[in-house]
Image (cartoon, rainbow, N blue to C red; front, side, top):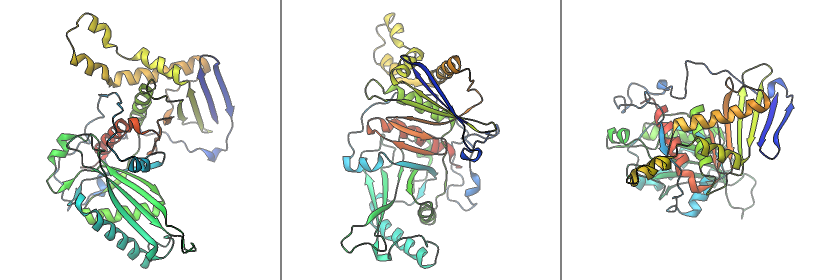
Length: 380
């Protein structure tokens, strides 16, 4: 069953109910013993070169972070466009051994040879076209790094010409992916041996079999390990708050939140909030340093930093305020529901680990959060 609710002051409320087939929505109750911080240690063998590197998996997400700022102006617009308006599947990846940004042309040839070899062995039977129709490219997305400790983002693209394509037909993109590190934990990065490069967030778009091949090549070449990266409830709540905070400068147009309820038959609740109403609620829960500054005009830069930061208490109050409003109007308690998806005009995110960034102005803040999630999920 699906509940669709809209919050708009002008229309007060709107609720519609539709029954769906039992197998149309798969809802599972999350085990209390598991969380998005759980490590997947089984992927590392005893011979891993990072076996003694201190990990971050015992830590939690930061309780405070800077409010989104529009400052991604150093990236080539054509390269930036490749990252936007595509839904990416997220994974974490452990540090890459002896990876060199200066050898990207060589890596392109090596990955191409690997794909062709797997095809010849019958392990990549779904590859379209002839082996000479493939083109693999590695490139650096200059300007994405937000600190001196961040390694430059690597973008990978695979083009292929269809089997029955015309002679003058250009190859089309069949797979894209990128590895990045935005505001990575400096203590962790500095603890790595000098031969390792930290690019913990891996985003891919394309056929799963091709993603699997590319991960396999990275694992063999750079002694690394990949694992699934879900977006947990806390991270989704952070995105709700961070994106809503951008509304005055870049309209979010809508705030759409989806909860799933572990009942039979399965229930999905879609809650759409008017952007201005969401902004007013967000302002009401924000800690306003202005009142404190009225009594202390000498705080200067310290007060500006406080005003630009957002803490987890504000995020929690904001989401709870949305739940309370929903209950007052529809008499449905969302405390037992699982937050599964959030979307605005700036982007969308799903608990399954899929993310779409639709606006480049505040993507650094989003990628910083995802980088933090990837580092926390890593087993080392």
